[in-house]
Amino acid sequence: MKKFLRVAGWVVAIFLALLLITVASLPTLISCKSVNQFILSRVNRSIPGTVDILDLQASWFDGLRIEGVTYADAHRELYASCRNVLYSHSLFPLLLSPYSLGKVNIEDATIKKESAPEIKIADLTFELDIQKGQTAHAALSCNL
Image (cartoon, rainbow, N blue to C red; front, side, top):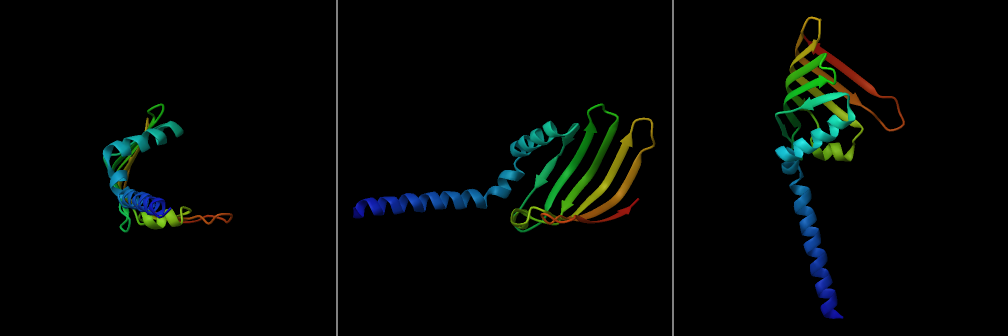
C-alpha cells in the first residue's frame, strides 16, 4: 500500500508540474504563428469577412500587442487596417475578468469603403467594461 501511495504521489506531482509548465508557457503558445493562424481561422469562420494579422505578442503581466491588423468584408467593399492594436490587459486579468476589456488603443488605422474617400485615423482609443447582467460602459477618443 505504501508503494502505491508513493507512485500515486509521483504521478500527481508530475501531472501538476506538466500543468504548471503548460499554463506558464501559454503566452508563448498564443504568440506562436501557427496558433495565431488557428485563432484567425476560427474568427474568420464567424464573421462576414477576413481578418489577418502579422504578429501577436502576449504575456501574463504586460498588455497584448497585435501588429499589422487587416480586415476585408466578404464582398471586398470595405477594407480596414491598422499598424498596431495595443490592449491594456494582459492574459492574467483577462482570464480573471473576461467581461472587462480594459483600454484598447488602435494606431494608424485606415478605413476604405468602395466608392468613398479613405479615412485615416492616427490614434483611436476605446475602453469597454461589461459586468455580467449589467449595462456596458464605454469611452471613446479619436485623433484624426
